[in-house]
Length: 77
Image (cartoon, rainbow, N blue to C red):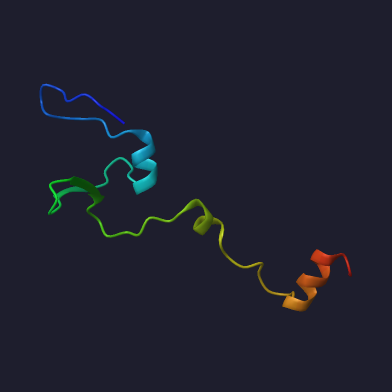
C-alpha cells in the first residue's frame, strides 16, 4: 500500500492498516526501526488489538447446561 507524503511530512495511514492495528482518531502510534532497517508502525498505547472473532466471544448466559445446549444443537430437545 502506497501513500503520499504531504509538504508537512504527514501521511494518511491506509484504512486496512488502521483496522488491522485498531487505530482510531486520537490513537497514539509508534515508529520503530528494526535491526534489518525495516520501519514498523505499532500502537503506542498498549491496548491489545481484538480480532473480530474475539469481539464475538462470550457465553450464552445462565440457565442452560452444556448438555442442554448440545441437545438443542443436535435437535434432541
